Image 1 (tube, rainbow, N blue to C red):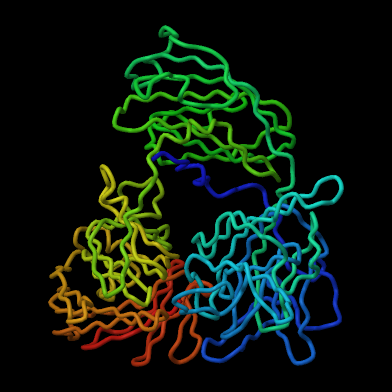
Image 2: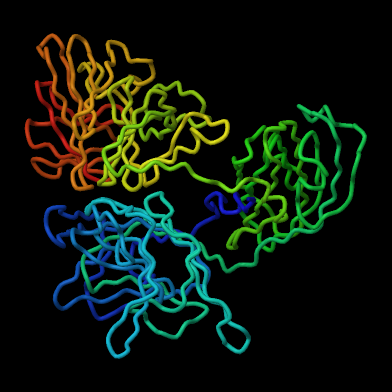
Length: 615
């Protein structure tokens, strides 16, 4: 069965955004309450219900309600089609909500650890309310999974909203939609139709525009980094495209330059189908695009084979081979008016299905597809090969990870243009029924990443030709994949994961206990190590190192966390990188040291070292 496999893979928009400075309250309508304020910093106590404090200054918006001051907050400006993103922090057990047009709520709640989220959990699209005569809630939309982090940590939300449509007489002709909602880097909703205002709106009467509203009557919540993109602008338009087709197994543009043109003509939409065959062709398209507004334009191209894109006389995507499911994208500053486009596509890989799709997004407008539907339906319908962890589960595959502090160390990564990524080739993925999972690197005894949600998508490993890798099915907390147990001299060395294995490190595999939990075994500088990580209630990952032959000659330390900044919260709790995650230690006295922009939290090696990650 064929289907529109790639039409929903458009890369994230990068248009110029309006950033809310949060230096004062002028963006918001005044009210008679005093629960909302501008602050320089906020803290929430993870162990105390609705405990949040703020320091005076600028850059953050915080709600600190009391018995007399519990007002909602509305923006002065009103919006129709809009994209809005922000960071938010929940106090423990706190509740709030962000409303588009004051009518359609995306729930904000401390849902940390909830296994099966409902529409009232964080990221849910809240339900509508009907009185008949009893209150009845209906038409709510739960997030795909619980992407909520621990209270006191900064979380991120991206909302792509389409306003309801009305005819000239004011009659609604199309419902509002949440086109996409991304929470902490994971898509939790797509194309949700909103049949009417959700509970607690400013009005049950829908409109083409309306203000943002934030609930302030339930509990403490803080915000920062608001970015707003008005998407109500007129989109770009494309004219007809002329094309020329040449046949042959071409490897470079010179191979078909000057070659006999076998077919030529004009088409309204880009499509590989003008070639008349699925392989061994080159197509050169020339046409134009009309943009109503000057500024940054976001172009996304997806094609099988090799492609070259020129826009307004400049090559913006050079000649490069791409796999059919891969997208190329670029941002280009372009003038208003007409600008020429030249696209070259040539393909000689018979094993790969033909495909051609292109999108252009102008400033302040939605993306427009320049291709025909038929050009993007040649791929087989995806049938994902998913692995669940209904019991403790161990799985081996390659894993491509992010390295948050890689730019601060000397690196030599393979297979990636981006030096902040790495392929872990001896990775072990450990899944837990609590929906808290991790990747362990056998080459250095390190946690490479942790994530919450569903376990793994093994399609990249097992589908068709496969590349041997798998992917997490939930929001990922990226770690540095550097050796945990090191000599004190290696404390700030972030390159210890680059050898196979690291010097002085000898992996010895792992054992499974009766329940299926692994204990990893290795040697390092004469020490024997048993390394175990266990999930607790879907909230905490506790890691225990049992180390034999520890003595002063080892001069070894256990790195508990690495970051740009690590701060002590109390005698047992530390927070990493602007409230990205917590580290809890209930024995020993961890030390923080900083060098060249890197902070390390560590303990001296001992017979038993135990700590927990909370996020």
